[in-house]
Amino acid sequence: MVYSIKVIKAFTLIELLVVILLISLVSFLGFSKFDFTASSKNQLKIEEIKTYLLENFDFQKSMKFVCLDYEKYPCFIYLDGKLNKNFKVETLFEKQPRVYKYTKELENYYLEEVKIDNINYKTVFEIEFNKDYKHKDFILDADNKIYVFNSISNIVKTYANTNEIIDQFYENISKVKDAL
Image 1 (spheres, helix red, strand yellow):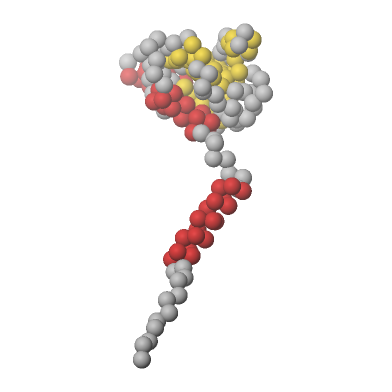
Image 2 (cartoon, rainbow, N blue to C red; image 1 turned 180 degrees about the vertical axis):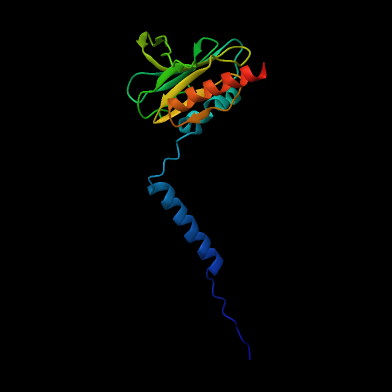
């Protein structure tokens, strides 16, 4: 008597799970609303701007980061006087920022116009680094926060209002007088 064993070809449970996982992944990627094209440069925050610029761009003479007064306040970068057309940030400010000189009087900071594609644009924010990686000190009032940009430190200090900054100026003056 000859016994024959019939072999049934079928998928194993693991093979079925892998196929289901692959189908789920493809459907998620194909039909989701998640924006996979957003890059880190478009998620730039004000507190991180100095560090980001100095770590990610090389220049010989100067680097200027400017934000313009139109639409969503787009920001561009100039490396050694030349516009880098591959870099643009559109989400840095929700509303128009104000820039002041880093003094206790909080004088408005004059920002020059910028020409892009033969069109002049008013500048609402600017930070320019020289060859020594230093910039002019200034105060930025943006999106209900006050930021102090000091060229000595890469850390951008944040305050709730301008009165805190003025108080800090007077405190520093008294510390210097006491030290002398």
